[in-house]
Length: 212
Image 1 (cartoon, rainbow, N blue to C red):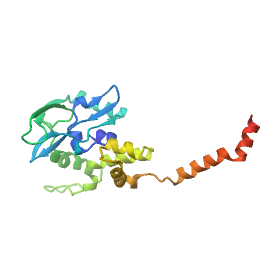
Image 2 (image 1 turned 90 degrees about the horizontal axis):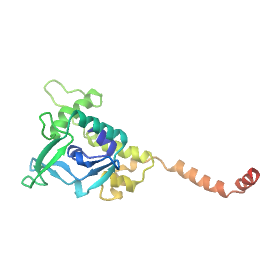
Image 3 (image 1 turned 90 degrees about the vertical axis):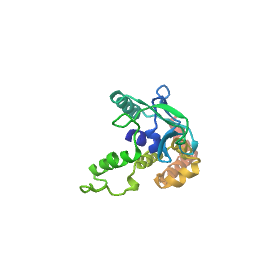
Image 4 (image 1 turned 120 degrees about the vertical axis):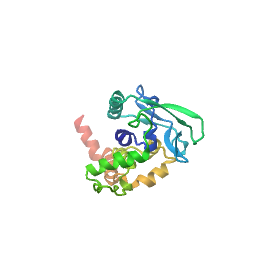
């Protein structure tokens, strides 16, 4: 799950709802067509947030991690209503399932697995005996999505492509949310203009003639 969140930028519900047929090994693509969510406190399959289906590049290390996981824990067919609690039943071979073979409950994942991992890593305090872990919204599983965005922006990916991969309605939303993660453009601007000036300067022409 961590590999999908940090390597493909998926939301938590999308991670929980990933089925085996979402993996396109021929094109190294992940087809996001559904999520697992609650409707009137009942688990259901539904389209991704905003109904925005999308394709996300599937990096090699993430694909390898998924294959290793499925080899150890084969996908399980799970039947749930579609979109609403009383919707028509839909069966999907989910990649991530619970210890008893059913779907993964979000609350159990967050409290029993994710926060325990955060505490073990020293990100949040260990819980006291009989107590609960501290609230830490900024360190929720959604932080993996922020990590994905920061990696792509730092590598020079454009906002429009990132918006498409994240499933945002428009690049403006992506820019508002992640503008602070964008690397400074000042040095790129200096280098770009300096390169353009160098190509047209008399010195560059003289140097080129000497080299000929």
